[in-house]
Every structure is written in structure tokens, then in C-alpha cells.
Image 1 (cartoon, rainbow, N blue to C red):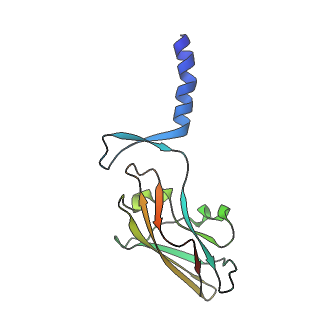
Image 2 (cartoon, helix red, strand yellow):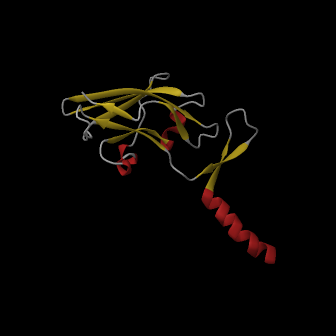
Image 3 (cartoon, one colour):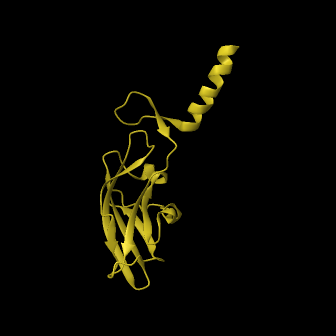
Length: 139
């Protein structure tokens, strides 16, 4: 009984920190996902370096041609003029090897474009920005 009492808090702690998923890469089975939520963002500024708000964003995977459903609310905590390129909600939209994502934002007579390479881990837990700008200028 004492072992059960000691094991129960450890089990609850472990289950609150991660998710178990099957590895679809070259791994040998299951892997653990952390509960963090990653978002790849970009800062959009105007010609004078001021943040640009109110743009409508489209992100397209160049490999598949699919337009990603990217929730811009994921970028709002990062500040004014920050837009989401992809998040962990998009792990199934990119490959382990990485895909070129074309970011296009427009509004208020301005347009901003950039290309990012975003990959995911073999367990589809998290995305990673492999390349792409931190900031782009809308013209």
C-alpha cells in the first residue's frame, strides 16, 4: 500500500508534463512530448521601423501547396506587429526534413512576404524554425 501511495504522485506528475505519441520517424516506438507550445513568429514593420498591425496573413507550404490554418492569436502575446508563421498546432502540416513556408501578409495598402523553413520532430510534438527572418518590412 505504501508503494502505491508513493507511486501515485509520481504518476500524476509525469502525466502532467508530457504526452506519449508514436514515433513516425526512424525511432523505435513511443516518445514523450513536453507540454510547451512553440510558435514561429515574425515581426512586421513599416519603412520607418514601426510595427504594422491589422494585416491578413496567408501561410502556404510550398512543397504541398496547402494553405496552413495559422491562428494569429498565438502571436499576440509576443507584442505589436508580431505575426505567427506556424505553431505546434501545425506539426502535421510540415515534414521532419523541413518545408518552405511562404508567409504573405497584406492590408492597409501594405504587403509583406518572406520564406521560412520549418520542420517538426519525428513524434510531431513540436515545430522548429530552421531558417527565416526575425523581422520583415511591409511596403
